[in-house]
Length: 172
Image (cartoon, rainbow, N blue to C red):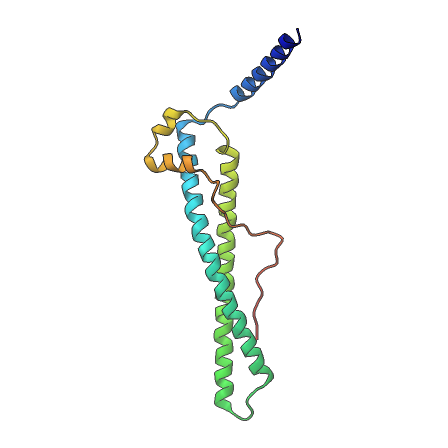
């Protein structure tokens, strides 16, 4: 009797699982193709933005070094040398322009990362863990099929904390 009762309980649990799975419709072919496109974009862009972020970190280090050098020169000026003073002022102007350009590039990167994270969120909501028909997958291009099979498990999408402080304004 207990075996029959346990089998009945297990069957009712499985039936509930089937009902829950039946409630979510499989992705349409069009939705599946959109999801595959999102995976490809997320893979490509995350790699590019990570590379770009690394390059900007190196630029930031260079700017910070030049800022320190200019501050040191400002604190210890060459006396009575007009040409050295003009040269110093020109380097300050160039450094300021480089810093402004760098900060603009940082903001562009932040905007791109924000857009990529929005795309990832959309993918997670509309695509991840949703069922799809094998026939629909097989009707996609080989690139799209590969993208859906690979998914995003190994993709590291860059993320910038919105609460983080803005990039420093390097001024000598």
